[in-house]
Amino acid sequence: VSVFPDYGCSNSTCNLPMKLNRLNDVFFKYLLGDVKRKTLTLSFINSILNRTEDNVFTDLDFLDKELTPIEQDGKVSVLDIRARMNDGTQVNIEVQVCKDPDMARRSLYYWSKMYSGELHEGEPYNKLMQAISINLMDFNAFPEYTSCHHSYHICNDETNDRLLDDLEMHFIELEKIRIGDIRNLKKSEQWIAYFSNQCSDEEREVLAMSEPAIKEAMKSEMYFTQDEKLRRKYEIQEKARRDYISMMENIRIAQEEARIAQEKLRKEQEKARIAQEEIVLGLLREGLPYDMIARITKLSMEKIQEIAETQV
Image 1 (cartoon, one colour):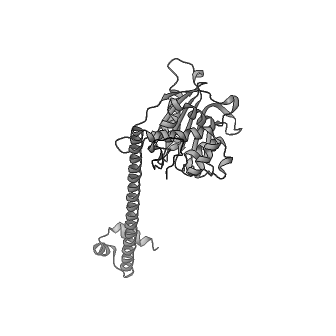
Image 2 (cartoon, helix red, strand yellow):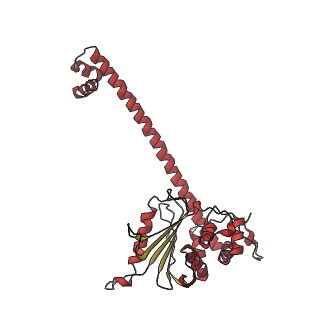
Image 3 (cartoon, one colour):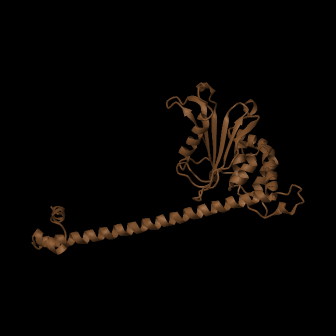
């Protein structure tokens, strides 16, 4: 069954059966990293940041639209969308599909590079502008929280007052979205649901009926699948992702097998140690001197003494 609704396209490729991974680097960049669809990017950013009315960003310029290539070791790259908003604020949107235990440090590192990189030599610090990081994660990184969206700022430990607004970081765990009534989702939740695998195609169609930006995003899906070059790039990225997941699973299995083997060896060594101690203790009870026990067991005099002292 095609995941793409019929928007009146007569081309047969519109109905190609394709289960679209909306977190694929190629598709995500196509959707939110292209100046042709910056209205979608603005909608996404304003929604996630809960900006409304006079507070909304009204325009943006993309600073770096190049994809980070897949490294030779097979590591899946992360799409990095950087944009400067109309008020000078920088926003970085990252997608992470493979679990990273250092996600928080990684995000903070890239935020710091984005924040400090705008200050040129000799310029005063008041030239620094707010930098916002938005991280879409296809895994759970914060097991202590049940909600899917977490935001962070620099605050006073006692009063919770913000030191300044320059740092703002958002982490979105897509697996944790609880959709419920699709018609009652907030704007930020609508975008989270759209990208999450927890949302069905039927539910996305309902979203499209109530949110023009989601409808436009789904139209873009149709055009994306009609472009053979984009689809080829998409498929290469998907293969790299599957290969990486397979490689990591093989590593996990190998590590688990090694752990089991080490545990088995540890138990065997412990069993041998206990048996050895029982032999030494039995010989000691028979009254044999240490030097004779050492010749029989091939243990040092010090080790025999150590075993003997455990019974004192």
